[in-house]
Image (tube, rainbow, N blue to C red; front, side):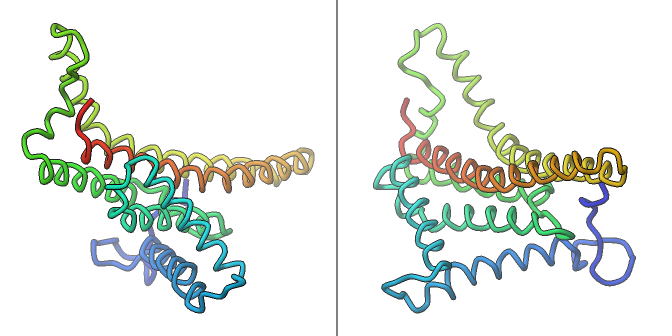
Length: 235
């Protein structure tokens, strides 16, 4: 699991909150990758788009349609926030697939900050828009009256578990894939099974490319679902 160790960029001392680390480096590279893809590649706005402009436009249209479909027209104003989350996660995931790189989204310290930001944003927005009526989210009026308090308790628990599942899902999937590749890479040193090991690594790597996109999509669409609850807190 040494590939997940946080190390200082300069020297071998202790890691403090202000120490530049490999996490800091790859988070910065992720931001630069987003700027290059969404800003620099679209600066000319060519009628016949380049490959990078096409990717940026596809990402924009894909997330915009998802936000509109899940949250409705009144959720479009929050599209920039969800687009930023999606692009950050997908770029961090793909950069983590580069050999000798560091996968920042494999660390709970990174994913839990994003998950808590979503949780707090949605909760504050819900109370800001609806006041105490936001609590109707937990009261299932369609259920039989004797069951409503029990269901309300379940709804409250599931609501506060959201940031936990939101963060661990992304972290766990990214860590697991890289760990499995590392295990098969260790078998590649054995000549008898080296060809099988290389084929397995290739297959897992291809799967990780798909997982990197899917996990960014899942994080974004769950954010849309939570946002919908804040905008329309009625069962």
